[in-house]
Image (cartoon, rainbow, N blue to C red; front, side):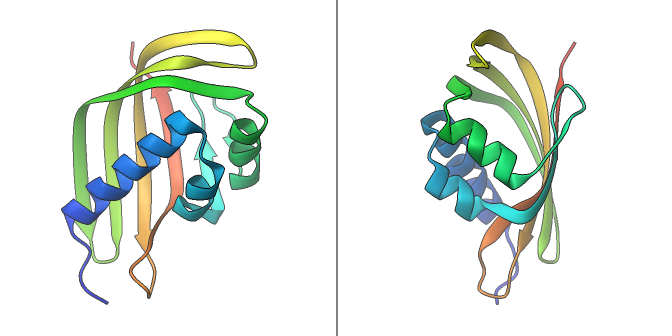
Length: 125
């Protein structure tokens, strides 16, 4: 296995962003670890299954998701990313538009694949 690079992490981040906008459950399934811990902006802890179900059932729709800043820290086969995003979409038919910060922990497995193992989102005040 080659050392994890910032470029690989940024590529995975972009694939995740595009999959979130498209609600592409197949790609999200590949990019999210089975034991994912995701704390959303309301403080709720969500599993991979819950996140995928929200996209699959169209409870969560994202129409625009643009990064205004990114910070990546790579340490061995783990990377921590902090990204500020402008998000437009809806959750349970409640429209939202705002400035969010996401922190994600990416882990590279023995095959070189990257998956999000933990994530947190918050509203930027």
